[in-house]
Image 1 (tube, rainbow, N blue to C red):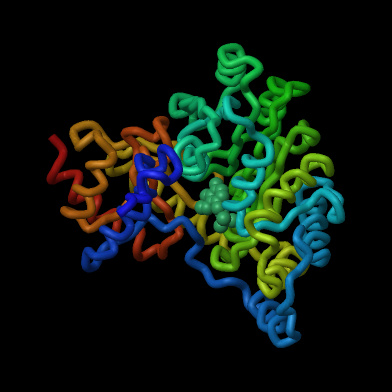
Image 2 (image 1 turned 120 degrees about the vertical axis):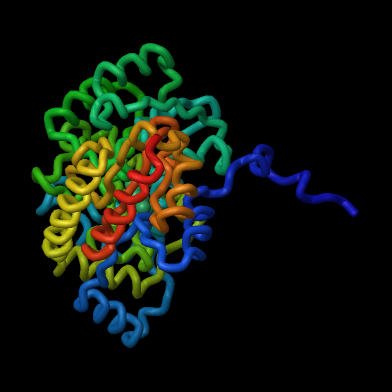
Length: 393
Ligand SMILES: Cc1ncc(COP(=O)(O)O)c(C=O)c1O
C-alpha cells in the first residue's frame, strides 16, 4: 500500500505541534491544578451582545454574508476605530472581516509574501507568528530580534541593524502591542521612531492590536498613526469583549492592499457566520466601553500577581496591558523553561506556559496569564512560594 504520509507537504511532519496545547492537556489531568495558562478573558460576553446574536438567529440571518463581512459590522468597526483611536478606514473598501485575528494574520501573510522574503519578528512573540516557516511553509524566512534586554520592546537601532543585514529581502515587520506574552506596550513616540526606520521602504507592517482596549497606563497608541500606508491593522472582539468563541477578527488596510488580502479570505473562508457578525457589530456599535470593568479587574490582578511574584524572587517587567506577566525563572531553579513547567506542575500543581513557546527571546522565562480569579492568583502564589523555597539550590 502506498504510504501517503510520505507525499504530504514537505517539512510538515517535522514541524512541532503546538506545545501550548500539549502542555495544557497534560496539566488538565492533574487534580486541583491552578492554571495560569489561559489566553482568553475569564469573563462572560456582555448580555447586549448575546441578545444580538440570538436575535440574529431568530431573524433568520442564516444566509451567506458578503465575503468581506456585513456592511453593518464593517461600518461599526470602522466607526469604533475612528472614534476610539483616530484610525480612519473606509468600511466599503478598507475593512475585511475574518475568522478571528488568527485568520487575519494568515490572509495578510499569504497575500503579501513571496518565497525568500524576510519577516522581522521581535520576540518573545505570540506563537502563531512563528509558524509560517514550518507549518504554513510559505518559503519565507523569519528573522527574530530578541527584545528581552530592552524591556521587551523593539528598538529603532535593532530594527535598523536587521534592515542593514537583510536589505531588500525584508518584506514584513510584525508588531503586537500590548503584547502577548509580555504585556509590553509602546508609547506613541516609540512607535513613531520605529515607523521612521521602515518608512518608504517596501515593507508591510502588521500591527496586531487585539489587546487595544486593555491598556492600563496610557491611551492606546498605534503605528497606524504615523505609517498608515504601510500598515495592515488587525483587531477583533476576542479579547476586548470576551468573545473568543465568536471568532470575529478585523483587517484594515489601504484599498489596493486590502483587495488582495480579501482574495485569500475568499479562498479559505468565503465569509464568517452571519449571527456572529451581527453580535460583533453590536459590540463595536453599542459596547464602546464594555472593556472598562474587565480592565479594572485585570489591573487589580496584575498588581497582586506582579507584587507576589517579585516577592518570591521572580524578575518580571511590569506589564502595561493585556493580561500576561512574563517572568524570568529565578537562579537556583531548573533554567530550561520547557522542563521547568513540567516540574512546577508535577510538584506544586501550578501550570504556566514555557517562554520558549514564544520563540527564542522567551528562553528561560515563563508566562503567567492573570485571566483567572483573585483567589486563584493568591492560591497559586502560595504554592509557588513553597515550591521555590523547597527547590531552590
Ligand atoms: C497577539 C494575538 N494575536 C492574535 C490572537 C488571535 O486572536 P483571535 O481569537 O481573534 O483569533 C491572539 C490570541 O491569543 C493573540 O494573543
